[in-house]
Image (cartoon, rainbow, N blue to C red; front, side, top):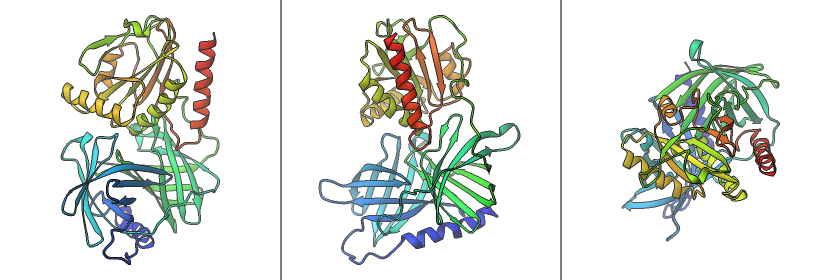
Length: 401
């Protein structure tokens, strides 16, 4: 039932956003369209195109987030957009004020493709909502597969914005609409295509369906609960050793490094377990870049350990190099291996488990674990500013000692 009604719900957005370009000779700047997740389910997207000579760009508008990418003209009316730093791209044709194309998430394989279409739109279709935040206790899935989350939601008239926090990270910037008792929230940031639908019944959200691209569907439900909290992220993963924390990584030239390297001697060390395909890791990387700029290397050493979908080591190292350049990283990123979380323990044998990308490990000057922080709730959440403040306070207090 949800599947059949969803297109009519999204159609209202497209009608609201779409208009006809008055100048048929000019290419419109503003576009609204949708990704075709299935025969009956579409995910709305909004973007801007700038085709000024020598300065072509593609701006993806993901709720409160604005992401700018280079726009390349291939031939004729065909264009491509590399959605850096992620390993994905948009390819499309633009003809008669209509766009038809495909999103290819190369991180999931060369054959992972989702069709999309778009038409001209009016400017500033999304506005920042000033409404108070409503907090919902969320459950995804059922039975042994169930997991908890928090929905932070703003509502102004029929417009919605917010995010969903889980114990492994957040679903980043969400935007959407309510029509009657039906709601939807969407996110497309180049790495993920998320769509959440549900029915509102008083203080509850029921019959929820979560779509991730065209490969994953789950159920969810939510209850208004201002006091609900998730597990402390520093309590989810633990070190099993009181001795020197062990690890083994590969640098971008293919050489091995481990905990005995002199660059870790007599200084605090922060190790980021991450992947170049992971939006929460990108948010954490932005935070760690600020930390790297604030603290000198002789006081705090920061490194990243990337776990990649690429099975070939040479291809994985090339992907890591590209990510480092796209992110303008000011700390070193190394290769850990495949994304299988059980394999991560082979690289970091002193952890009891790893349940999330990213996971951040803080070591003292003797190389012993001070803290393991699971997941990352970034700038789309209500706790990001407090996290930044508390981490800076922690590092400051350690260095002063």
